[in-house]
Amino acid sequence: MSLKRKLVTLTIAEKVNIISEVTKSGKQKNEIAKQFNIPPSTLSTILKNKDDILQKYETNKGSMKRIKICEYPDIEVSLLNWFIQCRDLNIPINGPILKEKAEFFATKLGHKQFKASQGWLSNWKIRNNAVFRKICGENASVDQSICSDWLVKYLPIINQYSPDDVYNVDETGLFYKCLPSQTFILKGENCAGGKNRKERVTILLGSNMTGTDKIKPLLIGKSAKPRCFKGIKTYPLDYESNKKAWMTSALFEKWLSNFDKKMSLKGKKILLLIDNCTAHNTKKKFNSVKVEFLPPNTTSQLQPMDQGIIQNFKILYRKEVIRKMVNDIDEGRSFSINLLQTMRMCYKAWENVEKNTIVNCFIKSGISTKEKEIKYTHLESDDGGSDWKLIVDHYKLEPEITFHTFTEIDTNIHTTGVLSDQDIVDAVQPTPKSDSDEDEEDEYPLVVSTKEAKASLDKLRVFIEKTEGADEILFKYLRDIEDFILKQPKRQTLISNYFSK
Image 1 (cartoon, rainbow, N blue to C red):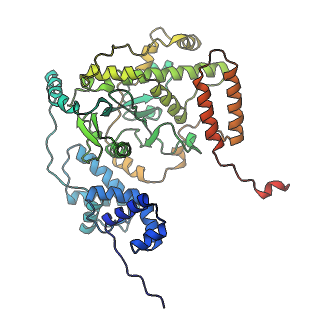
Image 2 (spheres, rainbow, N blue to C red):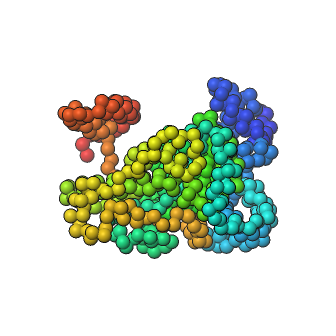
Image 3 (cartoon, rainbow, N blue to C red):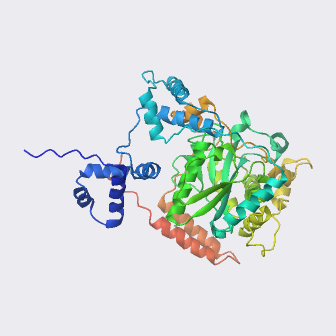
């Protein structure tokens, strides 16, 4: 009779050592399992949960024995999101309040057997690293001298970093479906609720001081599963969602954690400057990202993104919208934009924001002191060009509606806020079909085979070859795309295809 294996309970630190051994040693997994006296199945489980284990290790320094899985994850997430909002609004929270709120969410989510005991609350606090601290009062409003004082204090800190390692990010709202004829209807709309909320998104943009590292934008929409995303596996932007299409504390902390991991992989230690809105009020410490907050009510002067980078992005985005409108007119189609098309246009607009524009906006904010030899250049022209004139004639727009007013329709809309209890509950429940069909007028995305993609690429190559003055770099892009297409696995032919039905 075989001996029963003795149960081994591993600490988080030991699990991290096992993960490191798998990553660096090059040994077979069976060898590593024997080395640490654990079953292969346990090793597989550790590797499957690698990201969670590493995160727990950073938070608790390896002191925990087990990662306890909660029985009601939807209650757990709902309570955590509510707790983060209260913390960021400086609302004092204690244990009894948390237990009462947990039972409220349990009722809303249909968990009649749930009981918020003291033991459950203690485990919830451990799992989520929740600590009660004394709340300080909010910062008072500031005047002009605050900007000067802040620069005097923080410029020495900023100058300790290479300009390549100083970053700024900020959110902006976008009426992504808006037509020029809707300009005066939507201009200044705060979109805290109502029917226009569905027509807007929030987008987070960011870059380093030299413009050499533009961060992949994050798009926040209302629908968790837009119909236009069906079958899409690779997106030009990151995507999150909630009922208000707002940046929240939970979303920002998630984004910041991922950003920190990316900087760690690059071996960088960077300084991130952000405004002090409640959604940015993170208490978490990061390995590669040091966060410094700008003073309240000073972003119009101190925040580089607000010195013209976001404005430039919106001008370029609106030009893409106008270009699509002109193309739809030429093709005899009715105009519409879904979230996937918005992603593509946002990606192109952000790529077209020039490095010098970013450098100049950091200089204008007073944060950059090392790049002043670069001549300040004007922002992207905002007259709309010949495409805008065509749109004016086609839609018979009033003279008051200019391309400039079209680009400013979403200047003041809300990008952050507090989610209601119902919004928090909805976020952890399965998405109903009606909610996923945000773009009801749009068809499902095309399904393109490898053969069809290759044929389209061949046509594009002939088009470029027969176009006078085409840049030679286009042939490099064609080669890279062709290599990507050829690397895709071929779909296996089914034996049933050889027989008639």
